[in-house]
Image 1 (tube, each protein chain N blue to C red):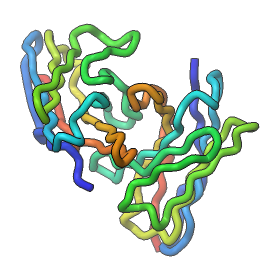
Image 2 (image 1 turned 90 degrees about the horizontal axis):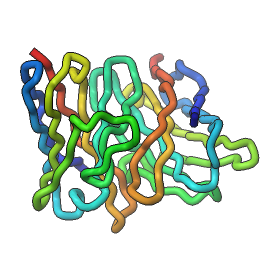
Image 3 (image 1 turned 180 degrees about the horizontal axis):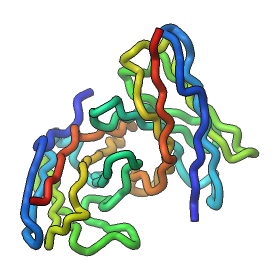
Length: 118
Length: 109
């Protein structure tokens, strides 16, 4: 059964860079998109962006200037970097697998809580 | 980019049916509409994709439809375990963007 395990720093100061990685297990890495989604406390889901196995990316325009997604296909890992964080970036960050055909997310990581506070 | 519009909350009694709407622009609500169920403290779980398709293992009490720029999720035979937040999600080929609705809280009375 496919598993996504994510890790990264959970406490950041304003202006620092958020860095998260998601490891993919029990599934092919090449046949899907890989995405990041976040959820601020008590709020809804926000799409951050997606990356494919060769590093092709699409980002949410509202975050595009601060976001970089990358892949390490040989390790079956993909990563998120978000620069110049503020309190507004405080959220639970999820990684997910997307199907190419209908662009839906069928497998999710458990989520990483990231808090930005001075 | 704002996402599709969903009602903030809906409620129903056990055994009843409820419908949650998801309204957007013509470019938002196309073929690539999916729905997610999220219980507190857990990641979302897909319950419908491609407007009407159910992933393996999802109860047939969940069904989807679309009319014009509005997609809908219907849950029949409400059960206590259905109490959760529900999000619609759409993908636009034109701009390769995924957008979520704001979410609907379902309360089972």
